[in-house]
Length: 529
Ligand code: NAP
Image (tube, rainbow, N blue to C red; front, top):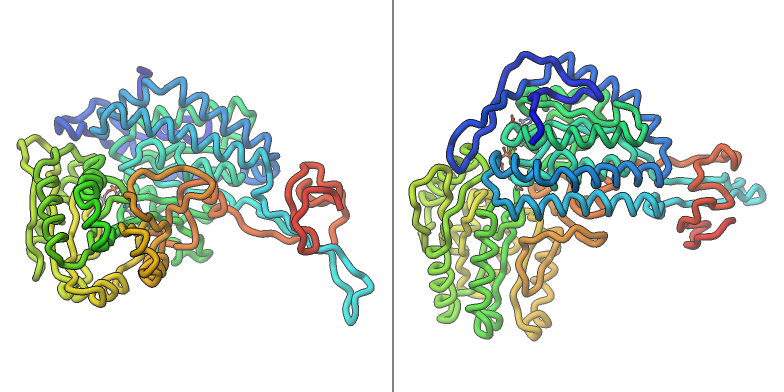
């Protein structure tokens, strides 16, 4: 295991900060890990931003092939450093080794997905409208447009994804792929993992011959250093995964800047699951087993954890909820990521239990070890749910709320009242799907991914995945934070008017030297014009 300095990466240099100091804590044992991590200073932040500004035009001028080489370079280094990364992350997060291994694999896969995307080049959305000087009453100009990088991006690491949504995770990979420099705000809970990963990214920047401002990483408190970063005039966009309070604070900071910038925050999601009678009657036990597993997977610390279960009251659905309660009661407790997240879970359960009309269905047993969360299932009526907006707030952990509807009309009212979520799931027979098109329409209106006869946890990283949804699941529900479409968050369209061919970007030249797919005078083609 390499030694850790606890200092920020400011381009190729390390900060010489003397503090404030933070230490990481092993949540499984509630013991402090020995390394001191030093908060980045205002001078560090200034230098990181100044380097990022200098790197901006260089990165914007890279070809897809050069960006792909850089992204592959990071992936190769992560692969080689996997034992060190796993060893540190298991201590800092309490996540099991297999989960860390799997998440590293996903992180490498994401980097390679973006590398292949930018190497192919079609993603850039090149459009060409050729000039028509003879058009009446006015001549038509030559217009050519494509996506260009946004500029330096601040990325906030997620507590619950120390790899896939942290230093070299999806936000960073998509920003690099778009051609943007990145300044990462390390998460205080896994700063050692961040330091190892930051070193790998810096190595890859050097090896690819890119400017040092391509990447910096700041240690310390997000509320202090992260706020300063989001306010800095050089920063052009923010990627964030975490609490609604944190994401909302960054949205408000960004909107209040003299020059507002976009914040792509993935915040909180309750991921409703609607169960129709036919599905319960035909395979209730299988659904109950899958649902309990999905609710408690990873100690419920996934943004796609199903936090609401909506069904009509019948004899079969009452038996289903009894079964689900038994599975919750028998499910193992698990170590949460941090003492703060554990406390928020305990507090969230207490608040929910005290709400009018909410009853406890089942609760797992606790062995009394530190930071353990016990699976918990509550129930309420449709009327109480509709009347009390707080019942839609995310309780981050292995907890879910059954909403009893007395009939289909009440179920429609409940679904109509749902806030935005990353996912919405329905279990139904084929016949029920045919007669409930309105329900699918309702779910599509409030979620980014609608799942039929499955479970929402387990997010595939692909070209078609959508990991986004209306607020509050995302700050901007038009986007996704997972999958290759995430690149579009860190771009903006530029149109070039009446440019001589040689002065155009290669993507827009007449000969189409990159052989990419383009929309030419309204017709999609890959040839020259
Ligand atoms: P968090 O408190 O939102 O923190 C995430 C990152 O944002 C940290 O680096 C944090 O910095 C920073 N941050 C927080 N508030 C900020 C602010 N006002 N201004 C600037 N930066 C800020 O999330 P967390 O620590 O990961 O977990 C806390 C709670 O978030 C959980 O209990 C859960 O409810 C929720 N959460 C939800 C998801 C999800 O996917 N839905 C994922 C993770 C967490 P500092 O803390 O160092 O100041």
